[in-house]
Length: 213
Ligand code: C5P
Image (cartoon, rainbow, N blue to C red):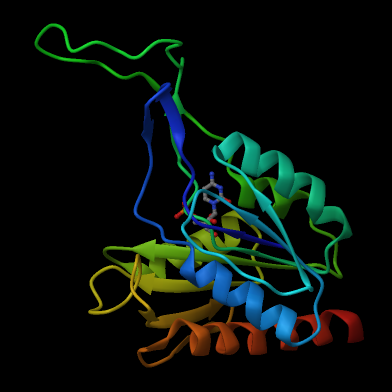
């Protein structure tokens, strides 16, 4: 199971809170897993991407809440989950039913935290299941990634830094460090399809270790 892309959190019928995630990394991972014979469930936020592989079942969602529902439903039957989506951490407390008018000097938007999908799956993860997370950091990346790894019960985490040229949102390339409890391995800047292959190689190692354990 793979989550990909951003989520949109509705403010009113024409506006949302979102982010710059393109979904490219998650889609590259879905294609790489399917190419190697996996049956993939791809839970995608709103993205401008298409794919056509018989091994990929795509479920389109918009909000963090919808993504959470689909991910929690698909996870128990999955051998592994890669949580690549840039899920909104906050959503409007209320969604206006009509377009909000431009009035007054300021508009206050009240937001509440969304469910942390990764942490919720980390809590129910079984010993044979492998959980992979992503972290996009602007500073102290390895330290933050290590604490996220523990907190969300990931087997390993893919760290990409916003400060690296050509890495992260919207680019076709990415520069990652794979971090597990024993430390980190840094990779050079590569096409996202090649980065996907590196991540799936590590995932395959984890799956064979967990089935041999
Ligand atoms: O805490 P942070 O948002 O940086 O964690 C990133 C990781 O957690 C990513 O793997 C992301 O897909 C996942 N996540 C999630 N649900 C959220 C927030 C993050 O699954 N609400």
